[in-house]
Image (cartoon, rainbow, N blue to C red; front, side, top):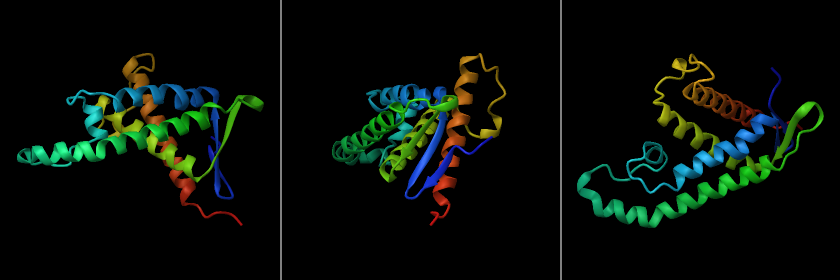
Length: 171
């Protein structure tokens, strides 16, 4: 398999298939928006992405104050990152041989990392992931099997991007 990410100066160039682009620009954002905008305090994925600040149940007032002060900014930052990824990745058109090539500046890379991480955490929570090695054994036609394959793909994609970021910038 060829590398998906490459450095071009300060930029990172990502090569995706059209279906991978669609997952990142449509399916993932739809799933994350549902989690981000949920008002359900019992939603496990939402609680994973926005955990309580005070574990002590006697600190309910402090938790309420923290949520009022910090939560809106956290939510706005996540939604902004999501929109940046949708705009950057979603606007890329397939080129030769159907590959979609997207050049990401530093802010785009940061947004993509945040979205990939949130998508993995939310999907992993829904799937009950505790060990990645247990995944990928279900029938891909089973909806849970499809979700597992997407989780594994997101994990791989995030790892490749991090590996690329850790490389030295070529002269």
